Image: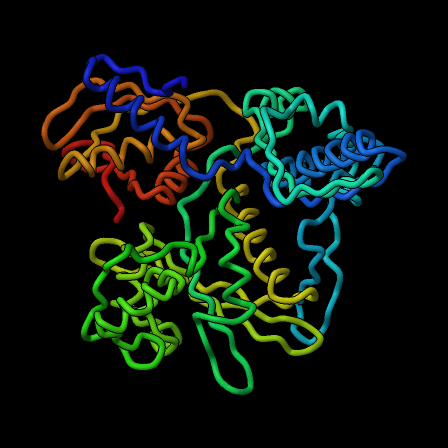
Length: 424
């Protein structure tokens, strides 16, 4: 691993590189999952070759669409690259359904279409699950890991700007609405987010039920009635002996009423359980012709809660398509916020303020992982602060915005100049 920090203190080198190694273990935006492949041919070997080839091309198309904006990735000679992942229909006017236009098919050329040879050159490795084969057919589900450097070199060779860093994850509280009432912990809306399809997105969305309570965890006696009923230890032990499924994390804490009322105390506790500081309460309803979804994003800082409305969308294709559309909207906003199209690098000296070693490590991670920060040199270190020199691309407003999304607040003060502190 190449550590992005250049540090004058030996201890700083060890700490920062260890931190970078830990960050690399998180969900990687250069990984594409759940590519279903199914091909037939005259023999099993040829069927497998065709299936893997088509799957790798499709994965490369999805990756390019993930990292770039539609107006920047338009293929040569007007040929569209890739497909819309959700195949969704969006309602600008809630009373009218219009197909989502593929911008790549409407704007003049830049990127050429991805072929099998090009896709193979970008891949670092792949895994196959649910593999089945016959003398003439090959079926499986493909996960493809791409080589960051190869992808970067490919896009840069066509002068296509791109994003390679993820925003902070968002915990989704899915409220399914129907004629009989609302529910959080069950149903197709819950399952759409629980599949972890979006862990590798530029804006990772974490679904309820993707993590579980540790064995022996005692439920809170004051748990809410209904969805959060208290289960006595003896009964819980009996359930365990009967091989009952594990309890989803937060199941005893969050009720549908808490979600619908945007109970900030409960939602903050859920955020802490899942290790995030942003929670999206998103309600969805199927109307027969379309699935509508919208809600509220809450960002929890130390002393305040910032709310942002999630615009209501309507899609054809069901709840999974609605979830994919919401992720796509957030990815597009993140790309517009962080992509730098031109210009060199600037430097900025900052004082990093922290309350302890964990806070310091979190701020290091926020700065090191920022796509706009090319280098961060540690010049001095103390118990409560550090002096660093940042080399960054783009304008300072973009850097501030990206750092803010990563949990670090960059601001100018009268006594210390530019400072970085925790935004949480």
